[in-house]
Structures are given as structure tokens and as C-alpha cells.
Length: 350
Image (cartoon, rainbow, N blue to C red; front, side):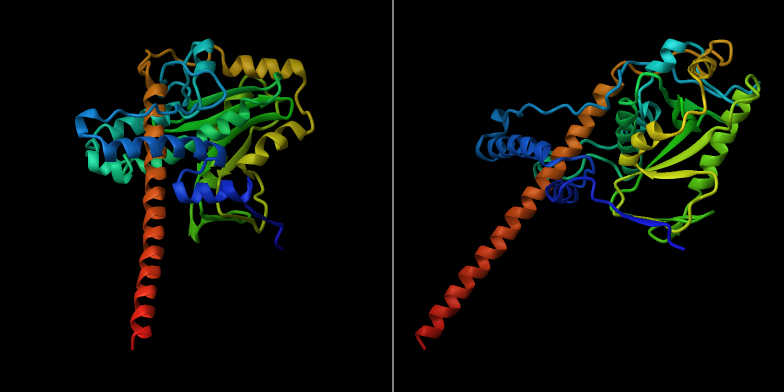
């Protein structure tokens, strides 16, 4: 039996239209209008002035999320326990959403040639073919991270938690009165998501997201119960950002599957299963320097600034492509009208 079908309409129609036109799922109509005005000024300057006199209009910087952004160490695999994290509690809490994904994105993007002036003018994307998936992943984790940043103060949120191997991470690890949660973020804009009891499909193609989410939660459950045997098992949560259609045919037995905008409300409505003391004990455990192995800091200090610059370039390119599309549409209409008038005049003289 069909449990529910959710048609995504996370904002009013203008916002949805702008998101589809620009190709950036987080763009709002107000934000688009601001960037549109700046892009018009920049495009006009590039068209009317000599190349050596063109001045770039100021570019807006887009915040990564509502949390603090400062460099933090990248942890590696701890073979002794099978799970890895950094040992400094302050630095672990300072890791921001999508930190490791952004680092990998910038590494991949570093091999992409710079766009020519003409490519920038017509709005070709600065992202390489191998960079797009990392970019979408980072944007999705940032969206969810900004929502988690608004949780009440009794909740603790950790981001980019290494587990299992150097290439495996938990996007977000959340501890609060409602329990302990591993949150996996998936950003698949304008796709159809179909969820079954043991299967999950994206545009008809099966993926292993449910099994992977269960595995991550099991690893953290083993870790916590090794020190707190009576704590309830960790709940895996799978969150989707901006799909076109979200259908749950059968609810999975273990994994909670949600739309991004429903995550915060679902967490705060949960019946409390941990007391304030237990919440603090679990949070201290996951943040304890005696649990995780210390490793050197390898994260560049300017990571967030470099991503903000790349993000602004991607948004600007999307707006420019839309402008050219509008100009082409207006030109086609004008050409059709002129042709019609010419044909009409020719027929009148016959």
C-alpha cells in the first residue's frame, strides 16, 4: 500500500522557477534578483568597454551554513578501533558541514582549466565534468547543516565525521533528547525518489543508500554501547535535498527517510529517550580525546573562502545562461513578428 507521496514545493512558484532556470537548487527569487542586477551591470560593462577597462562588479559571498567555519584537522582511520575521529573536542565541533567534501571538490577542480573570457561571458559553468557530483554533495550537506544549526541548545551536532576508512564519513552526527542519529545527505535536484521497505530508486535506478545508512549507524552503536550498554541503538536517517518527486511506497524498517525541510521538525518532535545527563554523557563520549586518535591538521585555512568564490562563479554562470536564453527567446519572437509583417505586406500588394 502507498504510505504517502510528497510533491516537492518547498517554496512559492517564483522560487521553483528560478531554481530550475539557474540550475542551483538553493537560489531564491530575492537572491536571484540581487545577483541578476549585478550580472546585468557586469555584462553591460564587458560589452561596452575595451577589455583592459572592464571592471568586475562585486560578487556576493554565499554563507556555507549557520555554523562557525574555521579550519580543523582531517582525521584518518583508527585501525585499533575500526573508527576514526580527531581527538581534540573543540576542533571536532568546529568542523563545518561538508568540510571534507569541499576539500575533495577543490582538489578535483584544481585540475580544471580556467575559463576563457568568452566562456565566462556566455555563462559556461566553471565546474569540470568530475566536479559536479562533489559540488552538489557539498551544497546538500550545507543545506542540511544550516538546518541542524537551528536545533535547540540541548542538541549537539558534529559534521564530517570520519568512520570506517579514510574515504568514508558520516555527514552529520546528532545527539539530543530524541536519541542519537547518523544523518546521510543526498542532493539529487529535479529527480524522482521512490522508497520501498528494502529498496530505494532514483529515476528508476536502484541505489544502496539504505544499506549504507544502516551500516554507519551500526558502527556508531557499537562504539557507544561499548561504554554505555543501556543506550538505545543509533537511528540512521537519510535526507534528500530538492528532488522533483518524493514517493514512499513502504517505510523502511530501520532507516528514517525524510525531505530536508522536514528534518528539524521531526527531530524536535521526537519523544525523549535520553535524559539531559545521558545526552551530555553521549556528547562527551563522542567528543572525548581518549576515544579518538590525534592526527595533524591538514585542512587549508582558506577552504570556506575558496568554496564561496567557486559557488559565486557557478551561480553567476547560471544567471548568464538564463539571460542568454531570455535574449534568444525575445529575438526569436521579434524575428517571427517581423517575418509575419513582411509576409502580410507582400500579400497585400498581390
